[in-house]
Amino acid sequence: MALVKYNNNSLSAITSTGLTAGAMTLIKEQTASSSATISFVHGTSDVVLDGTYPIYLFKFINIHFATDDTDFRFNVSIDSGSNYNVAKTTTMFRTYHGEDGSSGGVSYSTSEDLAQGTGDAYLNWDVGAASDENVSGEMWLFNPSSTTFVKHFIARTSSVHSGSAELEAYQAGYANTTSAINAVQFKGTSGNIDAGTFKLYGIKDS
Image 1 (tube, rainbow, N blue to C red):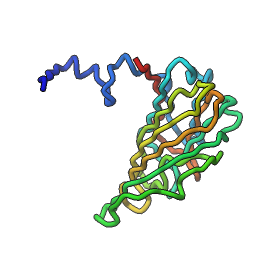
Image 2: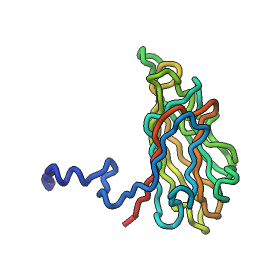
Image 3: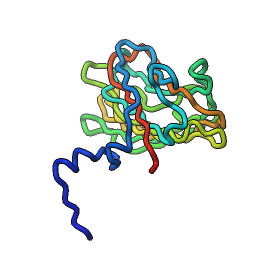
Image 4: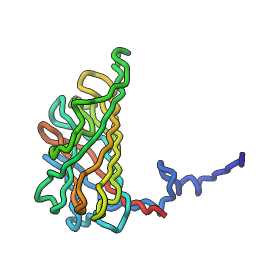
């Protein structure tokens, strides 16, 4: 096995995904402030969501909801955000562990799946709304501009559940359309997004 040595300069050029800094480009950052939704629409407010990049990465940082027991969801659009109603098939499972050490386990979340559903897809659920409770994570969207294939996505989020527990959710699926996806929207099922940062990156595959 080869021994790899790092110095401060080389470490600063490596991201958490193992890509060099030049391979991942920050496109747009939005800060929620009592926001009903956060949307990224191609061609609006410097957002790029087309064939420029084959992979897009959304990051959610300290997303805090105004209402307790709020589900964190998203949807996609093929008409620049006029409608967020693309049919999606998803699969989801979670890990859960109470702050008091109870209820630990892993489970498949049947009720949070979609089977060609056009409604919002889950990223996490029952997020607490106390001042120190929030949700963070990321979602990958692959080749949204394709007019040949369906559009795959993968997400992973970590939240403080309203029942005083850690809930980590794993979501994957596809938007069943061969039309280009040109807008993505994030929201809670109840109330506003009080605070938090949403970032959109474009990633080159070579």
